[in-house]
Image (tube, rainbow, N blue to C red; front, top):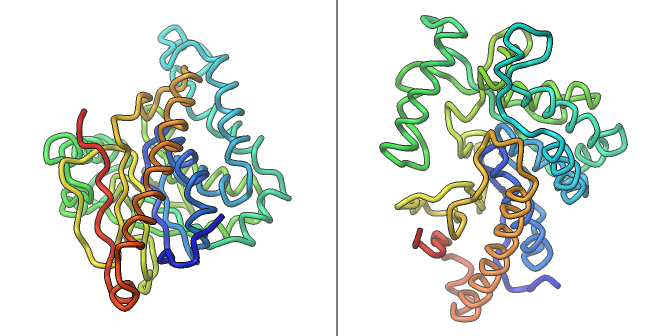
Length: 306
């Protein structure tokens, strides 16, 4: 049951994170009803785009079960013997596309279109770099910002000339076009092949910003920003509420071998969602009504121990 006095979110951001994005699915299950989440727009990137679409089509748990079955049948993330064969060395792109097409039939896509606008972020390589060199430079810049600087919103890729493109899922008329868009937003060689969108080479939009607040429109309103990794410090920006997992998610982004770890990510999301709802209700109960109309949300930090 929703709480009538809880502040509403106008926009939601789903951070990328590959398999870690099943944390989003668990979190969303616990907060959507109690917080009456009905955003006008959702910004997402990479695998978070597929999760956002699945949740808004009402098939979030179907997505978990389907991908658990796929990973149960895939014992490895790397098949070196396939270097000289027809099958891919990395199974990810084939598994990814098959899962999207199995999940989204025309009826499911229609439900996605009928919900909030879901905007996916793509990354464009600087003109002075080719697509392959650009992919290597993007990976280096991304990992420096995330693993060394440990910042939520990276700056180095933009300084190097990588540029964003935002595409609405409503532009996708068929499930095949949706799969093309999601894979374009997830393009991460060598895990995937080089991909194009409307004739231009693109990369995973996460190289521009893995937490794609930039994909929202110019008037996002109150915004819930859902992360898939832990940071030592979250931004304190008026109008935004950042939420991060209470502990490191067990599955890595490109681990397509462990249904148990996918379940762990989902279950952690549910526990964190329950804690977030309790924290919101407690904060609302302690805030006078007049102040409640004007105050901005503070970041929900969660347990910082790791």
